[in-house]
Picture 1 (cartoon, rainbow, N blue to C red):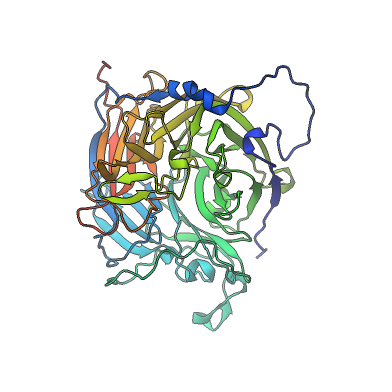
Picture 2: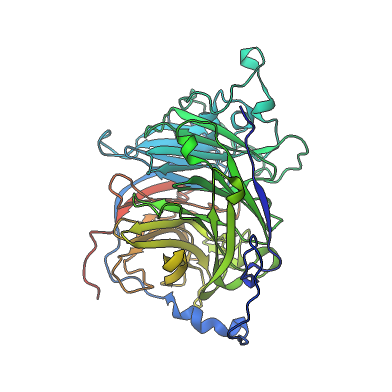
Length: 565
């Protein structure tokens, strides 16, 4: 088998990303400015920020909670026993025709979904299994290391499950490792034959592991990091799965895998102490068939956390359309918490001639000014009742997914992040961009949902087949234990407004006092069975609990046609 191919192109983006308006990867052209002026100091632009703030609850009825049940977390037990969970939870959720699949840090679980196969939702079929269970017998770091930050997705275009797991320690690649169970023979070429998900016998944790979560960036000098992929051969989450290991020369933190017709796109960060990102794409077509596959990639310096566009629904982008990369402005490590732009790149991949693969950008799209919620990440920002421990907002980055939704000729990209509103606390800033001529994106609408002075942060967004937008998020503050809520808007409502009321998914019953870390990220996804049911997962604490539980719930928005007041 040929070695896995990596195409690395370093995009050195000097200074602040918001100052760049030329592509880092194409020839430089000089053009005379047609207009120029001097803007007022940023602090004087608060009127523009306030103008998109929604300081009221939507007048339509709140989304109705259809199903709700506890997922992984404190008190969870299943066929694989029990486990303890480190912070943050790194919540990932995917939904298929008959199953709900959740990953929390280093553990995963599979639940029933009411429909063709099961008569109830939320019954545990598997879990809490180790994330590496799907790589049992595969060899190399993917089997040997049980890692956090794993993400599960459902590829509704092919009816397959996708599990992506990074390794945070350098190790010997499976291509150089021997199979000790089979006479130290070399491991077969990947992906080899598809294998079922390993279902371990139950184990029961009796005490919490000592210490905090190990540092993410280890000083390892030998071997390589890697990104592990598992792709099911059909809609059954128990498999079998094709498995792949792709070497990563740089630390692969915070992977955000997305689905696009020409590839599985995944961004990651190389360090908490560097402003450096990796943008990878794996050959989806070959991986779906269990064939030898390659990756191509770019490294970008001076750029915030990136999200790739992620197809929602069955209507596809135009053939050959580039995947969109998007980020916000500001720079956490430089204490720059404000900006007035969203920045995009176009990722064109060519699997036949890798020399034609290119990344074009960044291009700035002007938006209302924003200030990171809680001044960014890793700070005790969100107050809680009865404790001095505040919670982290992850306010320095775009969150969840960059959702691509096509409805006929209309092509939309929707994304969210946490910002500081003028009234205090934190709110959810959301954007909808639409494709214009020649594939250019333009801002269609934006808003900051901050209906009171409480904290709403760490949002996840999805869109249904009608163009309705649903957002789930953490909710809390000095008067409210941290929990989870949900709101949304109908496609025909006034622009920039979350027109629906607010639904409680999980009412917090205690404060989290063991750490400031909270979730890191979470997901809102659409059910592929009807393309209109929203599913969301988030953390909360039960009464007297020492650690988080998670709550999974579903909603629909299309039946909320009550006239607005």
